[in-house]
Image (cartoon, rainbow, N blue to C red; front, side, top):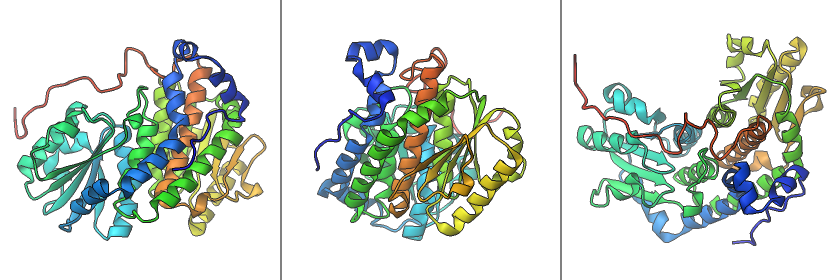
Length: 399
């Protein structure tokens, strides 16, 4: 593992925030979130090492030792967005149908959402203690006995990590404790669980790909944090996040980060570039921020560039943040921010989406501070780090 990347970024904005001691940062309400955002390059190295080790490699191999007929990636909130980023990537690599399904949907409509046959259900959870997390595993173990399970979690003490130790159909991939974010919002836990899930498709190149992704993330912190802080202070009331294909999972996660960290003050939406024209473009007829996560595929980017030019021609949106590599000047307006990251398009899809999400995290973090809120615990009294317990009702009950 290379030397740890310093958090002492050339960014003036980050430097100012990091200048305070631990107590001052905690009182200001951003200590955990900022540390967890900035630690991501380092933790990616650690997760890649873990994935290449014999113990985890065996867990991943065992999960696919009996070829499943279909794969379901499930979780709640941010965790299901991990699955949305992964489903198409795994399907293309493994040639097995893959779907991302929210845990709540499996809990309330198992017959309507879970395909019949021998499946692999991948449960993704930071804490593993949300009420529906274990309930979904319990219900599918009973109702779909042909399915096997893989749990990807950051919490060694959570229900998902501890409850099924004697159940041979359940295997657990436990990440380093540092990834079990203390902040309410998921940041390093998200990207590391995404990295871990992608290893089902490709392990051999993961260390090299993760190292390149870590370098690009550090460049993002160094070169673009100040510009993102300036964008975050603009007078927008809503934010629209655009992506194509599996990048829509990264767009949804970025939108959720803005919604959570703004305490609902910024209304958010995630949509595909081509889908925006079919009604959702009306959301831009007000002071709006547009965040465009460009595809690594040139043929797809042609469609995305066309849409960005259309928005410019119609003068829709207050400002745009465009994330990609080799961004042409013709799609960048006067008030826009182009985050041009060399090497981004050469990353694997999983690592590419990790970088996209880090942009969304930084933007939401700075917006939260601008609004006078505390990133470690936004929406006080509304949201909790782990969803509060609620009743789990038996399936098949009628009134």
